[in-house]
Amino acid sequence: MRILVTGGAGFIGSHTADRLVSLGHEVTVLDALTAPVHRGRKPNYLTPGAELYVGDVRNRDLLANLLRRTDAVYHFAAYQDYLTDFSTFTDVNITSTALVYETIVAERLEMMRVVVASSQAALGEGLYRCPGHGEQTPDMRPEAQLARSEWDIRCRVCGGPLEMLPTPERIHNPQNAYGMSKYGEELVAVNLGRRYGIPTTALRYSIVQGPRQSVYNAYSGACRIFNLHYLLGGAPTLYEDGEAVRDYVNIHDVVDANVLVLTDDRADGQVFNVGGGTPYTTREFAEVVRHQYGSDKPGVVSGEYRFGDTRHILSDIDAIKQLGWTPRRTPADSVAEYAAWLSGMDGLDEILAAADAKMRALGVVRKAGA
Image (cartoon, rainbow, N blue to C red; front, side, top):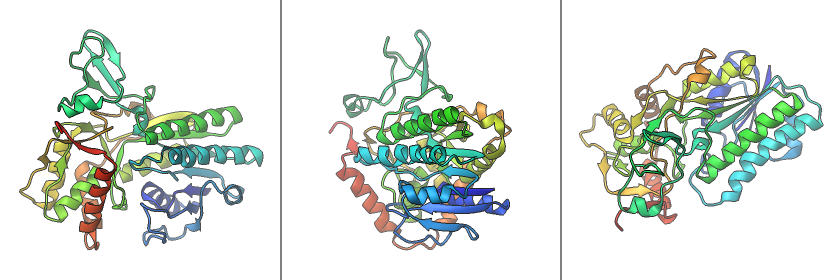
């Protein structure tokens, strides 16, 4: 096929482009190479054999010219990180997706598949159960609760403890601008795809880990943050009590899922969670990274928290397993490969300090009891 990968110079996009080229597809990459992920230049890992166009995915003429010679699209171009320019999330993530479909319809283009990158952030706090009051989808924890070091979510009826459940695709309760934009992107893609007969699949990635994950983002990436701390001889801060739950998925498993849904007709019109399938506390994941570096310094619980963080989230991946996909790599595999990729990079101490300073300047990192 002739395949367009938007955001194809990024983390997930470049690995997907690598695989597509290896499978014999003709790959075109559209990427704006914007900060903070990039520094305005072509990355040295860009897929050999893929044709790169540097430009904004919202450029109507450029996008139309590329789509006219395309059989399938992976739409990975996105705006992310923990920033307060809320309108930019909507403009980049939702508008660009709408423009892809607008162009396909206006030009009467035949597409074999459009695969849209969504996010676990669309799930928000996810699904919980109270023994007495059943399933609940909690909203963001109030700042006053976090300031008292009360980390766990309680039943909205009785105030009792809740059991975290794996969260299936039917749940959507985004609590931040990025998650809202990704859920909006899903709605645009899947609904327009159904309306106009454009085969479409949206994939809600959990926390994807592996080499090429940018070291420059201020907020995202426990793998990046923890690796940098241990590489530089320190130990990472574990926010809250270190017991927040996440699930991590390896980049190569994600690429397996991306390639699978390209040609499987059962994926048409569907949204799938793509996750690691195993819950890890922040403390447990920090231990994975610590062992990679042979450090004797465990993660530090300092009483700090990031306002707006999800307490627990674990994606239910049963639906995509029905297509024959399953995660095969572990967080230890991801950490080892990321550590090897970081080795030899310059200026990492400055990057870590700058990211921390930015988060504090934005008022995201806060101290309980302060």
